[in-house]
Amino acid sequence: MEMLEEIQKLKDEATSALGTLKSTDDAENFRLRYLSRKGALAQLFEKLKEVPKENKPALGKSLNELRTFLENEFETSRNNLGSKSPTSDGSLDLSIPGRKRYTGRKHPLTQTADEIKRIFTNIGFGIADGPEIEDDYHNFEALNFPPDHPARDMQDTFFVKSEEGKYVLRTHTSGVQIRVMENNKPPVRVMMPGRVYRNEAISARSYCLFHQVEGLYVDKNVSLAELKGTIAYFAKEFFNEEAKLRFRPSYFPFTEPSAEVDVNCFICGGKGCKICKYSGWLEIMGCGMVDPNVFKAVKYDENEVSGYAFGMGIERLALLRYGIDDIRLFFENDLRFLNQF
Ligand code: DAH
Image 1 (spheres, protein in one colour):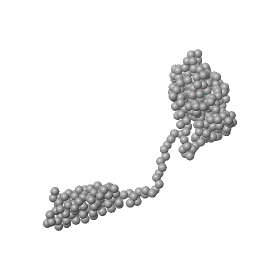
Image 2: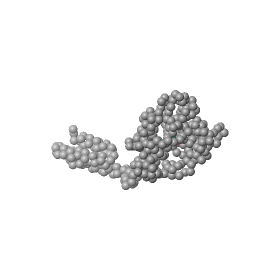
Image 3: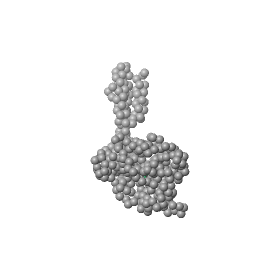
Image 4: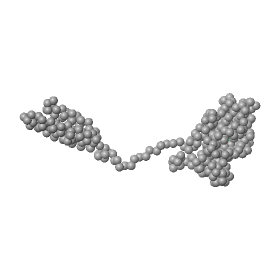
């Protein structure tokens, strides 16, 4: 190729390369490729030594012009690069500390409810729910509460004013048992989580609303031994493998016999501490065999089927599990508290 053509070609190539420079790295690559001591321009100067003597002055002049041209153009491009960079025009200050992004998470009560649901759905329980504004029939009557039972007392129940009938804010999730059995033939095996309300003085131990999970299993030949086995499985899954249980006889209108379940205090190992009130035991739920009167109310044949039911407070289980001593913390939504879960 003629030397003159080569000079023109290099000029065209380098000029279009200059137009694509975007970073200081690009600029440095350009410099190495075209302007450095071993670059394309230097190579042409090298070639100049071999051209016939008479052509040297003209070609030398062209090459020198090209060098000046490229060096100037390169300088301008590189400076423009600098002024376009956000760090040099002040729009980006790399010394400002970054902004931390916080990830959201589930409320500890939701986490606890999810865990309880997981444990029971693993052994075949389904999930059901019911209304928070409940009629007297489902909250009390069908559950075998006599009309004068103290739990209906103004102390505990929030009554709802209604022209259409007697309504309450449900005081427990047990009413969902009735709804499930009304709508399904046996066998039934369900967990019923939800929010409940009690008209109690607010303190570290009680709040005007809280959450429960109800469990119900009805089938032919369901026994108390199965109830105990299921609760023992739950306690091992939820607390730990070594969880020991104690069933204390108790009373609920909708179960017969009834019991309250204690787990050995895993905080002090049974020696006695503030959380277990120095008894070595922590109460975790109420339970029992479904009372025949409940089966009558939902038109199940009490001679054909039997069943067990249990109910636990989610706040209580969360308090025990995390060693929290004030139930109000769950409702204040203080991020310093919530961030710990
Ligand atoms: N509903 C009871 C309460 O609120 C808890 C309970 C006890 C539920 C025994 C049950 C049960 O299903 O069998 O205190």
